[in-house]
Image (cartoon, rainbow, N blue to C red; front, top):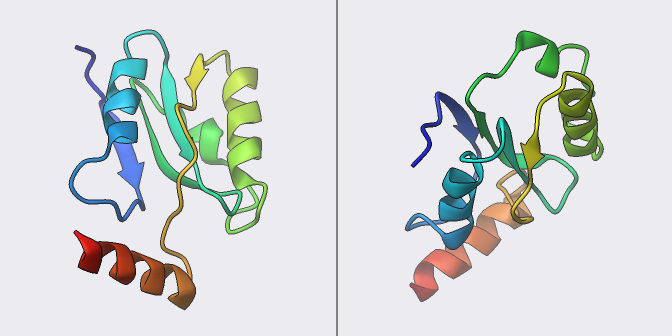
Length: 105
């Protein structure tokens, strides 16, 4: 199994969801893995190496940041996997969604 040396997540799912396992497996054949969020951002990014240039001069908080990050990664020659799309916690509405799902488990 591949190791992920760097990862950041804003993903509320518990326990570790199936997309999480897909991300770990994707690193066997890719340099970078991302889980784009429904709102155009991303909920998880990880990889063997995350060059600083990947995150420089990005439109943080916008609905295009996942697409921009993916395009930048390709420009840097990184092989990128996006095994799924998820939602993350950004707004009070997202928090309520998480609470409803958490209460159901």
